[in-house]
Structure formats: C-alpha cells, structure tokens
Image (cartoon, rainbow, N blue to C red; front, side):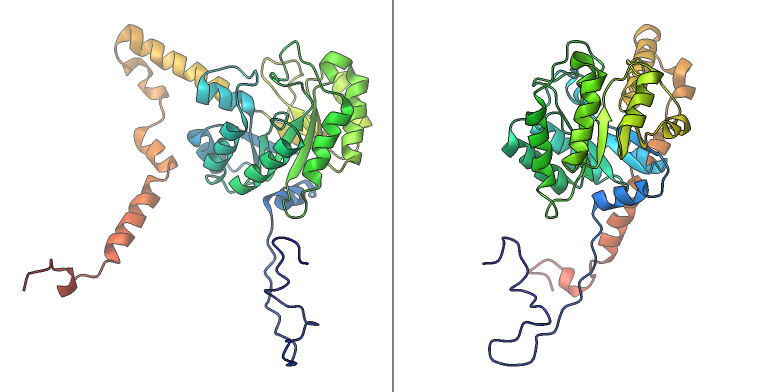
Length: 334
C-alpha cells in the first residue's frame, strides 16, 4: 500500500507499465522544490556567520526585508511584548506563535526561524507545532528544554526537564523529515540551573539526535562562549540580548569564536518601546509633535515600506481588465 501523500499512483515510474499491456507511461518532468530549510542550510554552507533580523510585527518584518538580512527570527519575547503587552513567562501558546508565523513569513523572502518554546506540550504537540510552522512558511524552529511555563532565557529562576524528555521532542521533529523539512535548533537552558558542563553535554546529545544547530542559552562570560564554541561540533547560535547575561560581541568576532547563527531577538522591540515613550511623552506634556517631528518616519515613506504602490497598481490593473461596452449596461436598458 502506498504511503499517505504518495504520488506513486499518479505518476508511474519509467518501469511501470499500463495494465492494458501498452508501452511504459511517460514520466512527467519533476521540478526540484527548494525548501526554506534547505535554503538556510545552503547559506550556512558558504562558511560565513549569518546575522538574523529580529522581527515580531508587520513593520519590523518589512524593515528586515528591505534591509536585506540573509535570514530572520521571530522570538517569543518580542511577540509577547508587542501582541499582549506581557513578559516572556509562558503566556504565549502554540496558536499565537503559529499565527505570528503565518502573518509575517509572507512578508519576507529570506528563511525565517521561529521560537517554539518547549513545543507547547508532549510529542504530539511538538509535531503539531512543526506542522503549523511549516504550513506558515517557516524555515525552522527553536525547541528548548525548559519546564513549562517557561521564561525568557536571561531571567532568573529557570528550570529544565530531564535530558531524555527534551531529546525525545527533538527526535520527534527530526522524524517528520522529509515530509516536513525544518531547520531544527536545539536550545538548552541548562547553563543556569545545572551548569555549563550539563549544557554542553545536552548540546552534543542533541547533535547526535539529528538537529541542525545547537543553542546554549545565556553563557555568562567570554570564557563560556569559547567553551561552547570549542566543545560543540556543528552549527551554533549566539543570542545577543541587550541587557542580558551574555557579553555583546560583533558578528565577525562571534564567527571567530565558532558561532554561525547570530540573533538579536529583542533589539527592535526595545528600540520601539524607547521611541514610543519619547514621542508619547512629548505629545502628553507638550500637546504637539513639533519638537520631535524630525525624528518620525515620514508618512509617505511608511506607506511605501508597507507596499502601498503595489496595491494601487494591482487595483489599476484589475479595473483596466474589466471590459467596457454594451455588456456592461444594466439589464432593461437599450
């Protein structure tokens, strides 16, 4: 019996003959489909560290696209802050993150990695999360080992699940391949509660389980960054959180230390909060934006960023395609 989704009965191979005894059925040419995950792997194969643009809403996604980042990241912290006005303490669920992925992936052309927290439940939930993210157009996901409800990786008081529980979730995503091909980042938060040695061991075991990259969250010194870069083979993530526990380093230096996926997940939302407070404070106490008008994004420029011209052009094309003539006259007229 064919597997679900198989094309065996639709496109017979060159060796399959018509049951009536005719000649072999012609083979339809198959076009190679490049998945977002394979595009990301190809970028990493070039040997240069990748800087991921952090995005969380439509404007930030449009800017990440316009500025030409090679890849992008949607993080739970920024989505929770912008969508709910709440901290990253496990309030976001599977549906909210999948919806954020669906809304934002369509706005950019580069591969997008998305925070999946702990997978939002057991093995079935993890696989469902992977399916939803793939349907949304994601290139891959981050899957971590915290106890749920989780919290931001740079907050105190984190706990992690046993190794075996996390590794089973990672393998559950790997086993979806090739039907669902996602770039899988194994994130461990064990550095805080259990120490760096345990975090390194978890990272090595995750690679053996078939993940694409390892992310040891919240190393607290240059020495710890170097230990991660030296001890863990394969691709590694460096998470640059302004005000967090990890030293902030430039892209090139992180690349020299062995990291090739560099994420600034909260910089944009921190900048947004700073700018909004400044402008709203000015309006509240001065009653006008005159003093800050030069600091605002121009109205026409924002419309251009959001694609207004393309929408107007489609409208003009649609109107122009409507035939004009006698058939347009209302019924009952002569």
